[in-house]
Length: 241
Image (cartoon, rainbow, N blue to C red; front, side, top):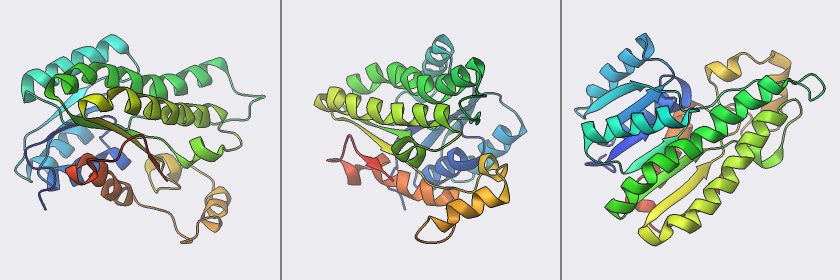
């Protein structure tokens, strides 16, 4: 398939998990890929090689998505290298779970900065580029926790709920220039992040899932392909659980 042929995508937090699956799926469909992570390490180097095997242009960048000026500099580097950006996937995210009575200010601030401020940082940096191009697609990674809440994840849920409000707002703001913005709210997906959960917690979540199984990063990547492509040219401001 070549649903994204000729397009350039930025994917944040892409060295592993959902971000990696999205990067590979987009490359498989013909997109040139610029991906970021906090460090450019062996994982990033290996991903570059995997993506390059699809015959597309690729470059990984070390970038702190939670830092405004660092994000601006990274986007400038990407534009100098790739010339344009058609798709932005704001995927960078962390968890620092805990009951409210034990949650520290640092745990709160870190999760809100990495999960929510990063979405503002990259969307803000990419907006004038897509505006000038007269189109683009922004995909923000929320979570079902941002829709329904979850005990012991007040910081994470708040960040993911904030992403939904941000998504709906800029969809209204940028639609006049054919820039679409949608959010994806994954459920329980098998990643390094969820692997750290106790087995009883995992089983409890699985029992609440109609399909009675966890999702895989590829399931999320397959979904993201739709809002990234022109097939969704009249869809914006939506949250897809």
